[in-house]
Amino acid sequence: MRAEMLNIVEAVRKTLKLLAQRMDLETAPHRLEEFNAMIEHGDLWSDPARAQKLMRERQMLMDKLETYRRIDRDLTDNIELIELGEIEEDPEIVEEAEKSLRALKELAAAKELEALLDGEADGNDTFLEINAGAGGTESCDWASMLARMYTRWAEKKGYTVELQSETAGDEAGIRSVAYKISGQNAYGWLKSESGVHRLVRISPYDSAARRHTSFSSVWVYPVVDDNIEIDIPANDIRIDTYRSSGAGGQHVNTTDSAVRITHLPTNIVVTSSMKSQHQNREAAMNALRARLYQLELDKRNAAINAQHEAKGEAGWGNQIRSYVLQPYQMVKDLRTGHETSDTQGVLDGDLDAFMAATLAMDVAGKSRADANSDD
Image (cartoon, rainbow, N blue to C red; front, top):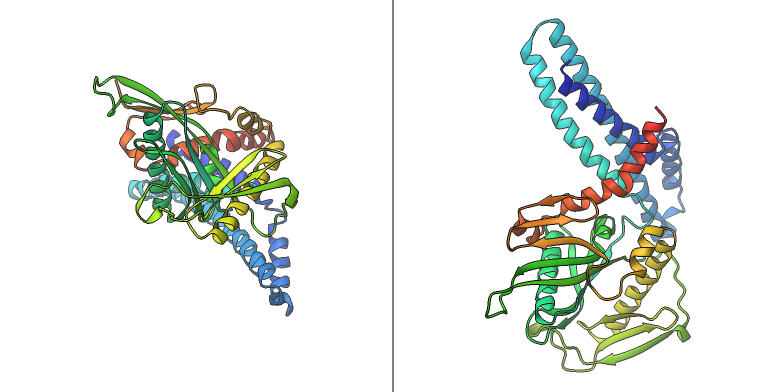
């Protein structure tokens, strides 16, 4: 077998080992039997929420098992075909099997990334907040560009994007915006985007056409579902209502229906300004629960915790990604080193490669190291 194919076989085998570790392959069939027994129990559907949760967990486990078995089976079959083709000196059999192995490697890599999205809240919907940094109109315009980038990315994923609140800039762009993004693994994918994003370009607002640097911050929090209890005493919050200052058109409120909730112990502030006051109050409380849950997650992860403690004003110190449009074109992630010259593609929502690189660094690298140490 050629060296290229040997490398592919080794890569797919490492993926199989990682997939087995992530789902605990030894116990998976037994857990599936337990799920089946619970689902067949007559009283299950007396609690619809619990029943739906069990059905989702069962389906996820079935999908993981099927993925593992399919990749394992296809790997074995194609290795045998290559060996058969070499014995019979049939280059067509070898070529076809090698083509299948290359495709299998791509499939395995994609499934490996999916398997890494198994954190406590990775499967949840998410809140996404964007805030302009210092710099006036320039930063507000950059914040609106980021908002467009993330909504485009979400739409390409088939996710639902719901505007929660928006504050327009004084002259252009937005000072802040918050979305709820709903879809499988929305938080798992977007969580790596939290941090400060830096833009370098020739300013369209500068009559002298000088180059400007702008900063905006992005913060991501998981939507807390009913299975996670977050207790918020009434005397820990202050609720204010005010008139929205949205972007205009259908988003303008003519009454004091917008809601701002301040969590006094942490000084966390959340807002909702796009619907009725009752709906805004509910949306803001959900956002606050998500923020408090994120704080709890951060306590379990020192690196994330340090990043959020450094949140402050958007500036150079906690920057995660640089978008340079002048004097050259380059988007570069400062954590992973991943970069591309297709700046327009990124600004149009092509972010998967950046998110995948962060996942691979933060999770897959550790898992691979653990797997290799067992060899």
